[in-house]
Amino acid sequence: MTKEDSSELKEQIRLIVKKAKRSIKAAKRLIEDEDYDFASSRLYYAVFYAMEAVLLTINLTSSRHTGIISLFNQHFVKKGIFPKYFSKIISRLFRERQMGDYGFLIDITEEEILDDVKSTENFLEEIKEYLEKEGFL
Image (cartoon, rainbow, N blue to C red; front, side):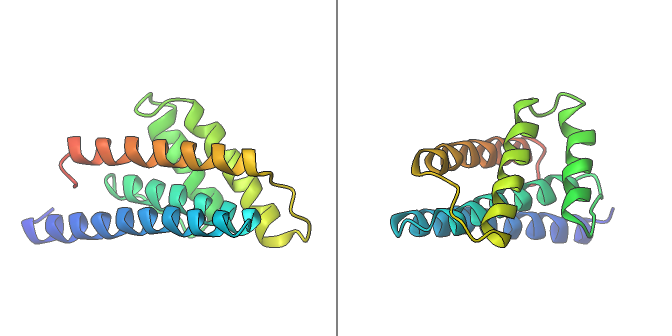
């Protein structure tokens, strides 16, 4: 990888992480309006963007959400780089996002969405620490 390629990759990762942060902020605004189903979607996307950023560090990507999740679990969770409970967070947020985006009933409670915010913020913080440690942020 050339120095130019490296700086382009770092910039792309920085922008993806920034978008993940914005997604969390948007979720919090939706929660204030008690739009928990829409908030769940934004929280899922924050985690999704974070996974994409980490996968770029090893030159991997996928055009499908399930592909990103699978690659992240295979290359980062199963290898112990990130804790196993990350898989549970991802699965829960993916399931809630499906309900929020495609369901017509709001099945997500205020307590659940507030727990999801904490989990998502912790997830993103650990991702950022990893990216900084690896020299990508």
